[in-house]
Amino acid sequence: MFINIAHAAPAAAKVGVKAGVWDSVLSASLPVQLLLLVLIALSIVSWTIIAAKWAQFKSFETANILFVERFWKATSLESVYEKIADFPDSNIARVFKAAYLELQRIADSALGGAAATAGKAAPRLSGLDNLERALRKAVDTELATVESRLNFLATTGSTAPFIGLLGTVVGIMTSFSQIASTGSASLAVVAPGISEALFATAVGLFAAIPAVVAYNFYIGRVRRLEINLNNFSSDFLNIAKRNFFKE
Image (cartoon, rainbow, N blue to C red; front, side, top):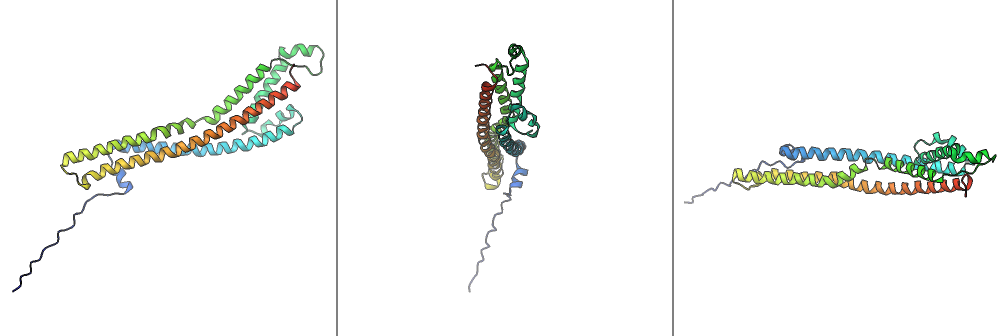
């Protein structure tokens, strides 16, 4: 007589852990959710600035090329100034306008008055330092305009990883707290805290990396624009020295 002893297979343990990204966000603690909102907001603003700066630099560079071509083809500074409204997006055009207006003020002031009363048809002016200061001020103003909001990218790139790291610390602390309260270190206990910790780190890096790359890229374009503005300023000064100022 054979006795069959059936051994019931133990049911597989089911762990109710949801590992989706959205589930990680919803199950995260309130401090981590607030940190994630901050990181998402930083990322959205950073991408907005990146897109706006791309369009701004493209507009500046195209307009500058057209204006410089017009400038060197012109027969007089007056003819360039009369067409200045055709280049509203050109940094170099605005620098030229500031320099031209300062040159006119010098000619109309007492600096050029003495030569004018002497009966000369083309008076030779003095006060070149005033023109140089006007050019430097105009260049600095344009650089300040193109550099605006780039500091936000630098701030995001330097702080977002640490904000994400703070979320990581909070997530790990949540896991330890769950272990202490339940007396168990099973996956179901520690997984939510670990998940939100890693997700906070990932979001911090997602916000920081594009901001750092874009900041370095745009700073390079600002430096190239600065060189172009300074070169134009030097050319304008040379023209003014040869044609309008005393030796």
